[in-house]
Image 1 (cartoon, rainbow, N blue to C red):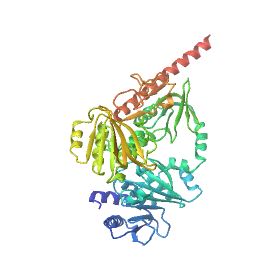
Image 2 (cartoon, rainbow, N blue to C red):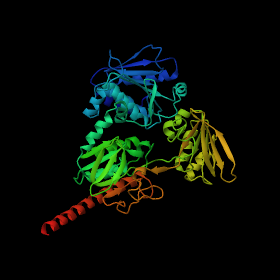
Image 3 (tube, rainbow, N blue to C red):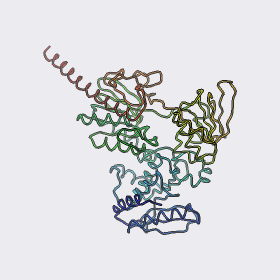
Image 4 (cartoon, rainbow, N blue to C red):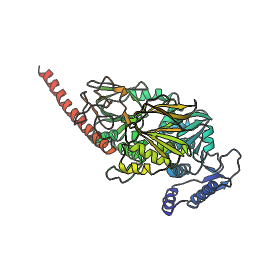
Amino acid sequence: MLDANLKNQLKAYLEKVTRPIELVAFLDDGDKSRELKSLLDEIASLSTRISVVEKEDAAARRPSFTIGEPGKPAGIHFAGIPMGHEFTSLVLALLQTGGHPIKLDDATIEQIRNLDGDYAFETYFSLSCQNCPEVVQALNVMAIINPRIKHVAIDGALFQAEVEAREVMAVPTMFLNGAAFGSGRSGVKEILAKLDSGSAERAAKELENKPVFDVLIVGGGPAGAAAAIYAARKGIATGVVAERFGGQVLDTMAIENFVSVQETEGPKFATALEQHVKSYEVDVMDVQRADKLVPGRVNEIHLANGAVLKAKTVILSTGARWREINVPGEREYRGRGVAYCPHCDGPLFKGKRVAVIGGGNSGVEAAIDLAGIVSAVTLIEFGTELRADAVLQKKLKSMPNVTIVTNAQTTEISGDGKKVDGLTYTDRATGASHRVALEGVFVQIGLVPNTEWLKGTVELSKHGEIVVDAKGATSLPGVFAAGDVTTVPYKQIVIAVGEGAKASLSAFDHLIRASVEDEAVVEEEVTA
């Protein structure tokens, strides 16, 4: 299953293994079991410290396997064949089980180790989901640290009957001790915050003791990362507070237009951003949501957990999120048939009927991707014609299981109380209402800026974007903004990076001028 190049890379990685690893396989007579057995045997052939055994267990999913030390209960279990995006999860699980150091800070490791209780996690993933590996890897590493934590990562496309029985309609989806625990991208700290009820209060107390920053950046996407790097290189006290480092980039499948990087994936790019920022003296405070900006000579950022951070200058780079169509049923069935990431959730709709709302590049690309998986795609565009590039439209129109509906307004997403069963739209030319029976709706109509918490403080455009000038300055002295959250046109990663750097340089210039003015005031007072 592994080509020669991948084998050589994996062999080099496995040389870092320092203790024995046992792979226990649970197989049947199917083709997928034979594929899994072949993969495990190939892995074992690359290291003398890895062995493969087959066992019978009526309760185990087939094909599946565990990763653990011989003679000890295994905390990591893969149900399926972890290739695609999950191959990295497999490699990390092997290395960490084999004694390779875990890249978490000591406080986080101790917090995991001290969790009181038995935790049996199950995560449903798809091999094409770029968000799933973070969840899988987080729970795997927690299982290695704490023997009372067990984790099974399940390929939803392979165990389709199980997915339908548990009504899993989005990935990643987590269950804890048999009950729904959460869905969507989550890291170790987010999961810990849900398990450890006192963690938010402790975090708030720690944040309250932070000194006044010279520059505080709110948001950890490309703009925020660039701003942090440029500020830190000036030698000033720099902080970054963010809900998740990487921002919208984490939800991006492929990046092929960032200058000097021919091709990469969003999560990889986000990791590189974070590593670059952390190579400088930057105080990164993640898993924290900003709730309020109180401007002044010293600005205050109030967080959702009650903590208050202070800074002489602030750079707002909170980015944007998927835009909703705001019709009945959308929020009620989000994660139960309503989805926003075709790459992540598409495989869960194999053989089913879906709709894509939006006729721009994102919508048409989504429809093309989904057409190869589902039985039928209905693309609905509000305008009188599609807005996507001509080459994409040509490809879409060549696909036999795609129906294109233009000049149509979606009015409702319906369901049976548990999951989506249809969509209703109005023909804008005739006023006639039409219903489409289906199982999934993918919304692809662009982004909306994350500025609700700023209303009444900085000037916003009619679209909710932060109004900035050529230097990234907002309507408030000492407060700057950058990236997709601003009025700067063309929401591209490369533009966000440049705007972040510019805002940081502007903030530094403001600090210099403010300090000179302060000195002048002091001198006046002394001589008066």
